[in-house]
Length: 261
Image 1 (cartoon, rainbow, N blue to C red):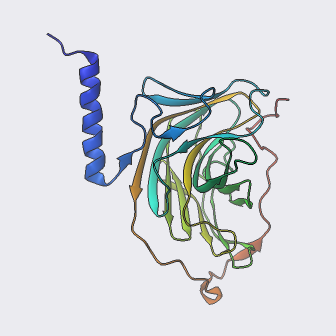
Image 2 (tube, one colour):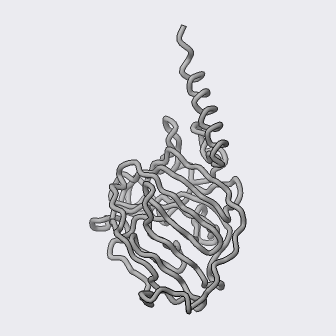
Image 3 (cartoon, rainbow, N blue to C red):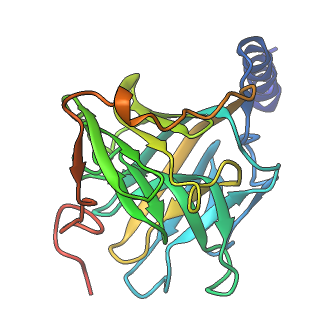
């Protein structure tokens, strides 16, 4: 007699949990429901083991809305997430963030790894409702103690189709933040701006207002890392090619096409 599907599914979940324990990662979704997470129930659900957030129309959301992890805060960590975005809009992974309950429920401010159909924006370092864009895809940057932005490195941007499944990795250690897509580095930020930076906070997934879109997550795993010293600000050690730059702006705040109104 063949075993029931639910028995097989339970074995698969147990196997995944054991593998996660072996490599130090903990799964943050249980594959069945949104236990441990908090978001607008009209926008978020789980189907076939996949977490889905849906913005059905430009009128559906007044603000970007977030699915917030309630299992604690994140400080020094490695996060791995397999995500895709369907529709001409973007999403992102928030970390070391805080809620803005005076704006609306499930609204967040903080660091974000963007998941954006415009290549220059996907995987960039950004601060939602804060200091804005830091480093575009392909740019490594530094904020000095006064908040001025410096480009300290450059490499080829990582080109992906965000409507397909891709793995996004965030590595946060002290004031050094690194983003990767499918194992390739997209942007790095070293944040010396002590008055504005955050070293610990909430983890959340963004659902973007405006153009209709759907964000889907099928894997999200967290590894807690040990404390590390902050990278000190040492102007004499900046690379000779370091250049002070203006903070990047965008002409594509949602996707690659026009904003639907």
